[in-house]
Structures are given as structure tokens and as C-alpha cells.
Picture 1 (spheres, rainbow, N blue to C red):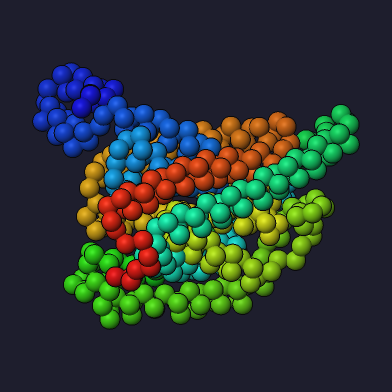
Picture 2 (picture 1 turned 60 degrees about the vertical axis):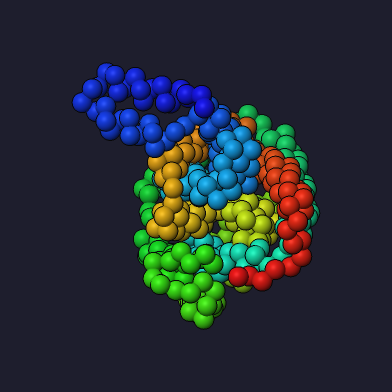
Length: 422
């Protein structure tokens, strides 16, 4: 195995600091990073920058890259992906929480109301999707995944082209004086709304939802018997705890929806097919969309961000709000996965943390570039196209990866039909 650049740096540091020789040698032995993993890291950095600019976690790109380029097994790649998505979404959320948009009256781009009404159903949907993933044959999952992503990518591209056309018409209508006046008004609005207000109550409710579902996942464990308490895999206790998620999601969603008088209306301001104007927020739409995204995410084995992002665009949420809100929701689901991997005995956690930090930086880079481009050219459609690029690449990579796995299963004589969940 060839020594990577990172390993060389560790060895150099060891020579220059003899007192830390034992510790750094131990780190080098534990990491055991080769050039293939470094190459995978570079590719994942680029993928994270593009993905998080559109509010997508990037798991659909990370897992194939880590398995094909770095040669990691699927279980290890999935655990790494959870940390990488967490790092990228954390940077995205921090960035958006500290900024205000003059386009939406100086409000935050994160729609906390959508997140509140959607998160319980999304977490429930993930559990339902995971069970379906265990039951359905691999070939059927691959075919359905390819069809759904192909359809979703096509719809997202059409929305992007439509939004681009509308933006072009607006730019042509503006003369120089109007543009200067608008910029002055934006500066005044930004100054008036410079004070950042964080909705701590909503964040506490979201944290309560997260802790409730995380406690169930941790107590239940997985089908292999990995749990913090002794429990028979797929026994009565396992299925009882799994079923508790249904009333939990219903109670949280009902409480959020019926106690909140109105959701923020941050929809697209342009008229046209597929773009809504002055749309009255439908409180039931977002939980249903989140439930569908969660089921599909768990069923296909990817994060819900790649699915909830285009679905929110379809119901008329503005691209900037969609990207910020989607990343905010992804943070809760990805941290849940990352903590579960840690508490259930994950290996190579040092490398996972390095990849997570790398994606944190990549996310900030991608966000900065896209935000500057939007400010300079006045085209929020760049976010939609960023989503389309990630989804297109994910469709190709994940479908190819799934087809290879199905072929291997077929050659090895494994069952190609429906299975029991345990």
C-alpha cells in the first residue's frame, strides 16, 4: 500500500517532535490512509461543495466514491458518509443562520416552521423506508431508484430552466437607475434587519423531536442485535419500539401544525407554470412531502435531502429557502445516523472525523461561491441547477453501483426475490 501525502506529513511531524513520536505513530497506524483514499477525499470535497450549495447532503455521491475509488466496503462507506453529510450541513446551517435575505424582508432563509412540521414525519419515513429496503429485492430497488431519480432530475431541470427564463426577462426589464435604486433599498433593508434573531423555542422543540426518535433508535438497535440494552433482534421489543415512532410522529406533527397559526410564506414571487405567487401555505403538504422523502430516502439508502429538496421546489418554495431549509433538516437526520454509528461501535472514527471536517470546509466554499454568483448575476436558478447536477451524477453512480451489486448477488446464487425484514 502506497504512503499518502497525509501520512508523510504525519511522519515529518513525528521527526520534528520526538516527544510526540509514540502518539503520532499511533495516529498514523490507526488512519492507515493511502493515495486512493486521498483521491476519494478530493472528489468528495468537490461533491460536497456542489451539493451543499444546493442544500443536498451529498450522500448519493459520497457512498459510490468511497466504495469505487477508495475501495471501502458499503458499511464503512455509509458510516463515513453520515459524518461527511453532518459536517457539510452543519456549515450550511451556521452560514444561513447568520445571514438575512433582503429579498424576503430581511428574514432568515431557513424556514423553521417548515422544518418543525416536516421533521417528525421525515424521521418516521426513514424507518419505514429502511424496513421496505430489507424486504424488497436489490434489483427492484435499483430499478425504482433509477426511475424516480430520473423523473425527479428532469422535473428539477425544467424548473431551473423556467426560473432562468423568468430571471432573464426581469433583468432585461430593469434599467441602470432601477438597479442602483434596488441595491440602495437592499442595503437599507439589510442594515435595518442586521440584528440576528434566533428562534430558540423552535430549536428546542426540534431538539426534543430529535432526542425522542434518537432514544428509540438507540434502545431498539438494529437487526443484528447492536443495541445499548440486551434485546432480541427483530423480537417483540424491537417491533414495539419501532411502532412507537408512529404515534410519536403523529403527536409532534399535530401539535406543531395545529398550534401554529400560519407558516412563513416564502414562496417564489414569479408567475408561471410550476411557480406559485402569493400562495397560502398548506400545513398538511409539508409533513406529507417529508414523509414521502423519508420513506424514499430509507428505501433507497440515501439521505432525504436529495429527495425533499426537489419536492419542496415542486410545491413552490423559493430555491434559496429550499436549499437552506433542506440543509437544516438534513442536519438532524445526519447527526442521528452519525451518533448511532459512534455509540454502536464504529471503526475508523478518526478518518470519518477528518472527512467530516473536510466537508465542513467544502460546504463553506460552495456556499460562498454560489451566493456571490447569485448576488452578481441575480439568478437564484443557479441553486436549482446545482441540485440538478448532483442528482444527475447520483443517478448514474448509484444506479451503476446498484447494478454491479445485483450482478454479483446473481452470480453468487443469492436469492433475488422478496425477503423477510429479519
